[in-house]
Image (cartoon, rainbow, N blue to C red; front, side, top):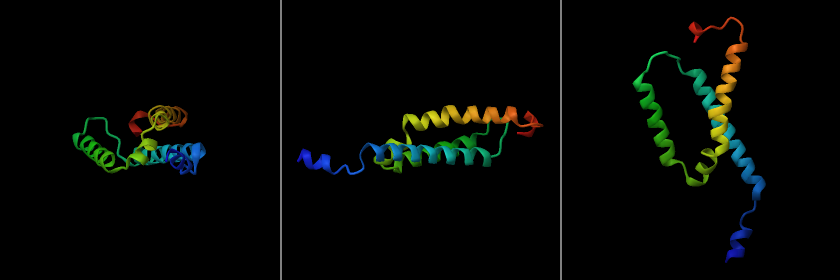
Length: 103
Protein backbone atom coordinates (compact mmCIF):
# COMPACT_ATOMS: atom_id res chain seq x y z
CA UNK A 1 0.00 0.00 0.00
CA UNK A 2 2.75 2.47 0.89
CA UNK A 3 4.44 1.89 -2.49
CA UNK A 4 1.22 2.76 -4.33
CA UNK A 5 0.84 5.98 -2.38
CA UNK A 6 4.40 7.02 -3.27
CA UNK A 7 3.86 6.27 -6.98
CA UNK A 8 0.78 8.50 -7.07
CA UNK A 9 2.93 11.62 -6.60
CA UNK A 10 3.35 12.21 -10.32
CA UNK A 11 4.55 15.80 -10.15
CA UNK A 12 7.19 15.46 -7.49
CA UNK A 13 9.24 18.31 -6.03
CA UNK A 14 9.28 20.33 -9.25
CA UNK A 15 5.50 20.60 -9.27
CA UNK A 16 5.42 21.58 -5.60
CA UNK A 17 7.96 24.34 -6.20
CA UNK A 18 6.03 25.55 -9.24
CA UNK A 19 2.73 25.58 -7.32
CA UNK A 20 4.30 27.42 -4.39
CA UNK A 21 5.86 30.02 -6.68
CA UNK A 22 2.74 30.56 -8.79
CA UNK A 23 0.43 30.81 -5.79
CA UNK A 24 2.79 33.19 -4.00
CA UNK A 25 3.07 35.42 -7.05
CA UNK A 26 -0.72 35.34 -7.47
CA UNK A 27 -1.21 36.47 -3.87
CA UNK A 28 1.39 39.19 -4.43
CA UNK A 29 -0.38 40.31 -7.61
CA UNK A 30 -3.78 40.50 -5.91
CA UNK A 31 -2.25 42.39 -2.99
CA UNK A 32 -0.59 44.91 -5.32
CA UNK A 33 -3.83 45.45 -7.22
CA UNK A 34 -5.80 45.98 -4.02
CA UNK A 35 -3.20 48.34 -2.56
CA UNK A 36 -3.28 50.51 -5.66
CA UNK A 37 -7.07 50.41 -6.08
CA UNK A 38 -8.04 51.19 -2.49
CA UNK A 39 -8.28 54.80 -1.44
CA UNK A 40 -5.50 55.90 0.90
CA UNK A 41 -6.57 57.72 4.05
CA UNK A 42 -4.52 59.01 6.93
CA UNK A 43 -7.08 58.24 9.64
CA UNK A 44 -8.33 54.92 10.99
CA UNK A 45 -11.45 53.75 9.14
CA UNK A 46 -13.08 50.82 11.01
CA UNK A 47 -15.31 49.56 8.21
CA UNK A 48 -12.34 49.01 5.88
CA UNK A 49 -10.64 46.86 8.52
CA UNK A 50 -13.88 44.97 9.18
CA UNK A 51 -14.23 44.20 5.46
CA UNK A 52 -10.63 43.04 5.32
CA UNK A 53 -11.02 40.68 8.28
CA UNK A 54 -14.35 39.39 6.97
CA UNK A 55 -12.94 38.58 3.54
CA UNK A 56 -9.82 37.02 5.09
CA UNK A 57 -11.97 34.82 7.38
CA UNK A 58 -14.09 33.62 4.45
CA UNK A 59 -11.01 32.82 2.36
CA UNK A 60 -9.37 30.92 5.22
CA UNK A 61 -12.59 29.02 6.01
CA UNK A 62 -13.36 27.89 2.46
CA UNK A 63 -9.91 27.42 0.93
CA UNK A 64 -9.00 23.72 0.71
CA UNK A 65 -6.05 22.66 2.84
CA UNK A 66 -4.07 21.43 -0.16
CA UNK A 67 -4.16 24.92 -1.67
CA UNK A 68 -3.78 26.82 1.60
CA UNK A 69 -0.42 25.17 2.27
CA UNK A 70 0.91 26.95 -0.81
CA UNK A 71 -0.96 30.23 -0.37
CA UNK A 72 0.00 30.69 3.29
CA UNK A 73 3.63 29.59 2.91
CA UNK A 74 6.78 31.27 4.21
CA UNK A 75 7.62 32.35 0.66
CA UNK A 76 4.29 34.15 0.28
CA UNK A 77 4.77 35.83 3.64
CA UNK A 78 8.24 37.00 2.62
CA UNK A 79 6.97 38.41 -0.68
CA UNK A 80 3.96 40.24 0.71
CA UNK A 81 5.32 41.35 4.08
CA UNK A 82 8.89 42.24 3.10
CA UNK A 83 9.34 42.83 -0.61
CA UNK A 84 6.10 44.72 -1.26
CA UNK A 85 6.75 47.46 1.35
CA UNK A 86 10.37 47.78 0.19
CA UNK A 87 9.25 48.13 -3.43
CA UNK A 88 6.58 50.70 -2.51
CA UNK A 89 9.11 52.72 -0.48
CA UNK A 90 11.72 52.72 -3.24
CA UNK A 91 9.06 53.65 -5.80
CA UNK A 92 7.89 56.56 -3.63
CA UNK A 93 11.43 57.85 -3.12
CA UNK A 94 12.38 57.53 -6.78
CA UNK A 95 9.20 59.08 -8.21
CA UNK A 96 9.88 62.75 -8.92
CA UNK A 97 7.31 65.26 -7.72
CA UNK A 98 5.47 62.86 -5.43
CA UNK A 99 4.90 64.07 -1.90
CA UNK A 100 2.87 62.80 1.03
CA UNK A 101 -0.08 65.03 0.14
CA UNK A 102 -0.48 63.11 -3.14
CA UNK A 103 -1.27 59.86 -1.33
